[in-house]
Length: 324
Ligand SMILES: NC(=O)c1ccc[n+]([C@@H]2O[C@H](COP(=O)([O-])OP(=O)(O)OC[C@H]3O[C@@H](n4cnc5c(N)ncnc54)[C@H](OP(=O)(O)O)[C@@H]3O)[C@@H](O)[C@H]2O)c1
Image (cartoon, rainbow, N blue to C red; front, side, top):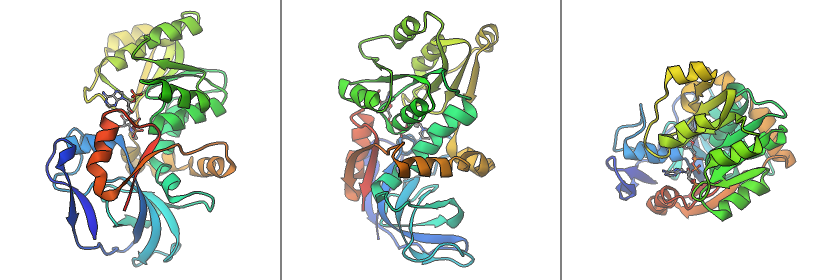
């Protein structure tokens, strides 16, 4: 089968098309004939070699794939050939076929396309966990979402708005801000022109926001702390800048601020029920039209390098997928 390999850690030109044997499912696994593979920013961090515990090169990247079950391993009882499924993977999604643990797959609701399904698990489970289970967001509170027009960002804006929060969101272009606004962002902020802290101060009478979803790192992390209210909370879940940030314990204690970290893969490994409990609510929201997977560009599998570069150049909004 055709797959994409990261030959060595580095830039997007380290992604190449290879021919590899089609995998066979082990016990407890199924093989998926992939229709759409989600690209996550984490794939780029892994490719750069900046992802703690990431795979050693060479490897086939891809943490998320949607398709049809085409072979079933021993001991799998509730899935059969022909079922439409989507799931989270360690690696291997940038390919024509992948094997996956049956208990980490969800059936794709009838009304959902394969592309929408490939954009669902990582971004919606991450956004939901960061806002509610980790961030404790409640109706009437305010939340600042960094990278509000991105994959996780578009999910977070919708979920926060539907929950009755006042939503601040940052992005780098007017087009992205328009998208965030359409999804329920009350205060879209172009951070290339305006300091998000100034907007937050103005709109909250200098108090700051109750919660920040922070995924950039570097100085955005510290400035997000500045934009938080006394007793405010932050959930940090990404380092898109590639520059990890540090926090002063003295600052946190004097300002009564809380910073929590969230990592979907690690959380799913240590206590899957804590993140998976949101699946029924999310699939219902998606099926009923309260939530929408925002699809960005789609690329042919062979063009994975171009797709990575597109995301790294900050051209993407919503979910970017690969089509084998
Ligand atoms: N912890 C977890 O379990 C988990 C799960 C999923 C994703 N994540 C993290 O969440 C973040 C969003 O992931 P995603 O897949 O949905 O990606 P994404 O938001 O679609 O893309 C990243 C966005 O970050 C913004 N950005 C700001 N500074 C950047 C920089 N220096 N380089 C590149 N982009 C920059 C860009 O938006 P603007 O152009 O608007 O600035 C860009 O479009 C990433 O940091 C990712 O690693 C974490």
